Image 1: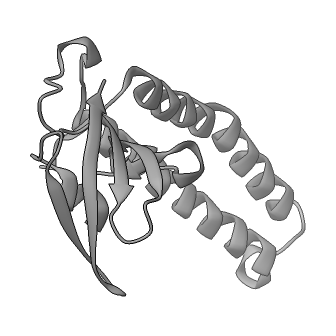
Image 2: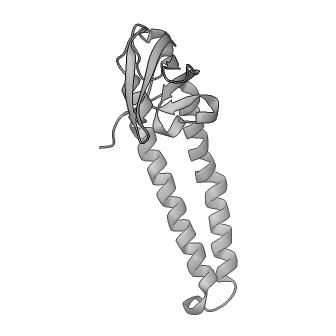
Image 3: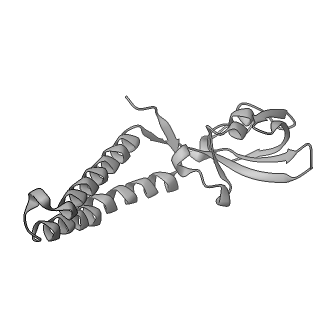
Length: 157
């Protein structure tokens, strides 16, 4: 059984859309590539056919993986999140104690993580250091460069 992962509605919709695309357009493209390669002659000596079949296998594996992710996905009602401490899907405003830089991140599942849009994985070192902390707490995060300290300024949903 796969590990249960929590998603926002947006993240869950993206996964479903990707799966739909892979099953429809993606499978059609794979079938076309195999058909075209098959038309090029003897299958025992046809490298293009072998490559198309291998690509199809990888495509089907990706579909299976995505189906497993969706089977263990759970939607979190963000309106019921407790904002007294940092949890998955919380928005957290933190200040780096060393350089006083202020950042805001949302803690999301690994597949939703996107640093450019301020979404970090709950499994990342920073998120692991923040989970369970409250406003005013100092989170010590062990990173490759050493230990970083972040003060939690605000928690929202």
